[in-house]
Image 1 (cartoon, one colour):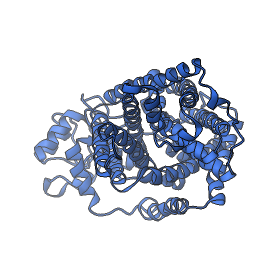
Image 2 (spheres, rainbow, N blue to C red):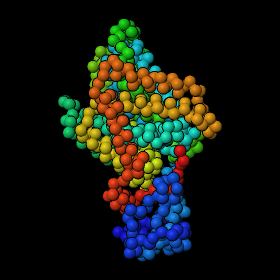
Image 3 (cartoon, rainbow, N blue to C red):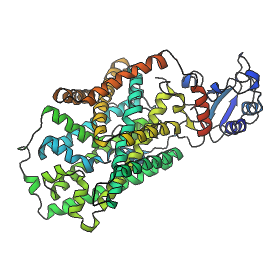
Image 4 (cartoon, rainbow, N blue to C red):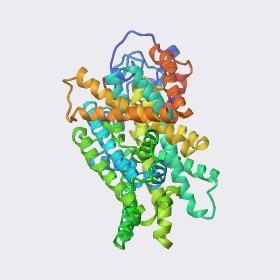
Length: 551
């Protein structure tokens, strides 16, 4: 184990002398509690091996002394990477095209292929459903523009977590990381992968419902595949995202072209029916209908989770948003018109998979293309979801709000492997024990609490940090509008139709304080965690990053 540690250090660390008067290591042995840990969390910068006072290089100094059991107190190990002088941090590899692909790829998942039926069912009206589809797109765009200001003002990864730290301090930021890490991102991943699995196996069991065990098995396999891609390489993950985004746009184009063909032939009767006469919408139904529509749009804020990896973020972040979200909104509008060119309102409302019904009606022997399109779309969306979820773990852990190991990066591949693995394990558990319907309402209700919180953070920082650099700045009415709508989306369903899920969500958020006070505020740590951290570092070959951000 000592040889492996020395090898890892030699390949990844440049040592520099830093003299301190501290006790020598017990009997010249390695002190596992301090192995590869960062002094005073990541705020101090660099990695501290409480070991020696030798002037040394990576080959002959701290790493060699460590291998020989002769480390002394005080060595400062700064940076690590494939080369001795290459520090470990997230690399800027996401350009404009990849940024647009990440937004479009994570937004267009299973929602547009499934959600139209649920939205029609809750509104009872084609007209109102179209209005809600467009309103969801507008709300997503306004929210994303506000996030662009936040993301260019604070370019650290973590999105809402980083903004809450800036505006409100530790407790609200911790509550977001607590809920997002354990519930929001894993449940989103589980929903998408369950949808992927359902449509992946459907062509092979077309005469009956796919067995639940088979669906869950395929969902778990898909999570493992996506995890492997994201742990292996950031470049590979973004290439997969780009390819699957292009493929899902081709699938959208097939639906739109098929609908246009039917419209040219004169199939417009379903679009000419009284659009508001059959409406059954109430204030509560409209809010839950927004949940259904906004699920299809969710992902509009995902680029903010990876701002440390965006090339020229002050330019590419807002530009990616301005290109990506209107493109998705246009696609959704055209797809809904195409559905109604082929199916009646009642057929859409009764269909569990609108795109599959569309394919069966229009494509004949090529109907299998629609389940394939959904699987491509959902796989790409799941890839993007995990890509950003690992960065949330990374950002929160770096501030001491999650386990230290979750902020570590692979020493050669520069991927936040521990955070990715952590999210994937929780997603697998949710796949095994949850259902799509039970997860969506819980996800949407909880997510919009924090989206509204981000708008409040922007408003607060306009007054508390008026002179902070803002390369991109939105009109102040935009965050106010999104904040008001967020409050409506959270409060209206509780008043109109209370559900236990809403109580569970609120209780889970507040329950985070029971974790925050002892483990973050008062600094208590479990005695065995240091040994676990060391073991995981050795197995995963990860180290803390050298890049720090002050909030």
